[in-house]
Amino acid sequence: MNEIDRLWEFLQRLTPLSRSCLLSELERLELCGIDMPGSADILARLRAEFRKDGSNQARATNPSRYFFAPLELLLMDGAPEHANAGRISRNTLTPIWEWICRDLLPTMARDYTKAINDQVAANNPKETLKIAATFQTKVVKVLENTLASADGTELARSKLAQYTASRTAFDDVRKMLHVLRAGDALPKFNEKLPEKIAKFDDGQVAKITAQLDAFRKSHANALPFALALVARRLKTSWELVRLATKGAASKSATDVAATPYACAVHMVLDRLDDKRLALRIALRHNRVLIARDLLAEIYDLEYALKVRIDGIEQSEWGIRLQQLMNAIAELVAAEVSRFPANVGHILGSRRLRSHDSLGGKLSYLAWKGRDVVQDGAAVFRKLIGQT
Image 1 (cartoon, rainbow, N blue to C red):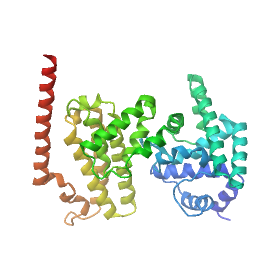
Image 2 (cartoon, rainbow, N blue to C red; image 1 turned 30 degrees about the horizontal axis):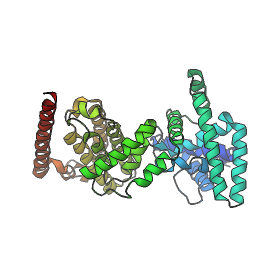
Image 3 (tube, one colour; image 1 turned 90 degrees about the horizontal axis):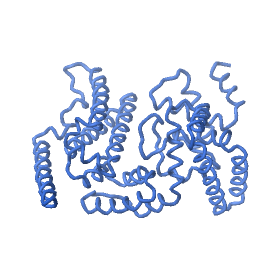
Image 4 (cartoon, rainbow, N blue to C red; image 1 turned 120 degrees about the vertical axis):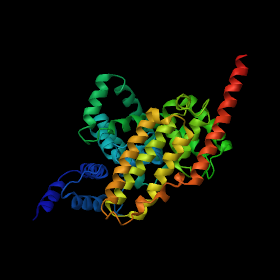
């Protein structure tokens, strides 16, 4: 018996929930780019056990799946450490569920699990959803009481750390609390959105902004999740920025930051980081054509932020943008350096930066010219109002 077989024999002595938690943890490390010798075989065996379809994405077991159902549209498959405002990492659900079952509400969780399993076996979906909603309410109340004090927060954080080494898993607990507390407000908001927003023009921006205004009056803490639902409908992720820039007094970074939807800029930067991670994975697996398309999208997103927010370079957003672009440049440089200097590489093509062309520069000047006129008109209206 080799070492992997001995390790697998040991893992079989653990509970299924513990093995599922281990699977989530190994996948988290993989997404973080941490290589663990021998983990590939264990990952394959755990995935075969818990995911009959061979999926690489974490799927909760039945009782927890019903409990986490309100989060489904907000889940992402990236590493928990990755910034994801308005989204929750799917890989943290298993450790959070284990923490709820073993530490937060062990007796109620056992009763809930039995009740859910009974109703699923009886093919009674309405009663199943009712039981899940009741347990969600209980968890919300306990979390509110627990997190009301510094001591309770620290105890909860330390208990959760027993099930995952992720430094941001506790942030996902807070996000979960905001989503569950919002109740059916998020699903109702989601239902009112168009299925797809092919063109996010001024009319659509105004309509969506009105819906967001109504939502945030009652659920301000859940606003990032409403924005994440809007982002799912957009053709390109950078368009979310328009919710912030459209309502600003001018295109300056300071004025954009003062709007209620300034967090949309942070969320777009999170999407840029998504693409950075995807680019790293594509390059690691020699998927150069996928890397090329990702890089073109990255350059488009960078350009869109710079052309729509004046002075972004000196802002907190600009600093993060530059850090991300530096990291992306390092990935590209490392890939290009693998080839002789006299051999062109597709990732080094200037065509990927289409905005550096003459047409792109003319478009940039057109945008800036329009901004000058609009900002001048805004100042004029402000002066008229003062007089």
